[in-house]
Image (cartoon, rainbow, N blue to C red; front, top):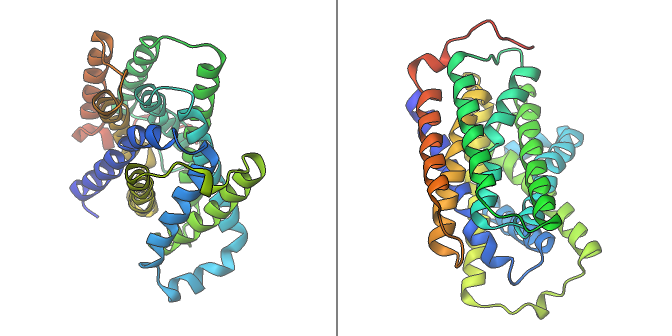
Length: 301
C-alpha cells in the first residue's frame, strides 16, 4: 500500500471518530452509556455482516480464544469506557482527552514492537501534541469528581485501544480485516449488552425515541463499522508502523472539538483552544514529513 493511500485512509478513519463526540453526547441524553454502546456495536455488527465472507470466517474460527480476548480488549472495554467518560465531560473536552492517544500509541508501539522506533519527528510531534492537549484540557473548567472520573474513563479507552493495535499487529497469521472486524464487533456487542443489562437494566420501550436519536445511533454504528475496519486494515499492513499512523489521531481533538462547538449548545471555543488546535495541526505536519520514517537510536524494544 502506498504512503498516500495509508495517509488518506488514516485521515478518513480519524475524521469519522472525531464526529462521534457530538453525536454521542446527544444520544447519551436518551440512553444510558453502556446500553447505548451495546446497541451501537450490535447495529455495527449487522452492517459488517453483509461484507464478511464465510470462507474467511471459517479460517478465523480456530482462533476463537484470541478473538474473544481481542474483542474484549479492543472493543468491549474501550466502548464502555468511552461512553462512561463522554457522559461526564463536554463533547469538546472528550475529543481533547482522546487526542492523547497518539502519544500513548507511540510509546507502547515502540516498547512492544521490535520494528517500531522513535525518531526526532515522532518525539517532537508527540510532545507538541501533548502540550496542546494539556492546554486544551486546562482551558476547561472542572466540575469536580465526575469530570475527573470522565477523564480517567477516556484514558482507559485510549490505553486499551493502543494495546489492541499492538495485540493484532503481533498476530501476523490473522488477516481478513472486514471479517475479523465483524467477529470482534459482534463478540464485543454481546459482552457490552450483557454488561448493560446487568448494571443498567434499561427497557428499550421506556426510551423516548425520536428520529434524531435513531439517526445518531445508526450513524455511530456506521462509524464503528467503517472506521474500525479501515484502521484494522492499516494496522495489519506489514509496512505500516503504528507509531506513524497514530499521529493522525491528533485530528480527533481538533475536528471533534470543532463539531462539538458547532453542534452542542453551551460548548464554545476559547483563545487557548484555538491556539492549541493550531499546535496540533503543526504536530501532524511534522510527524508526517518525509523525515518521519527515518530511525534514530532511541529504540526501546
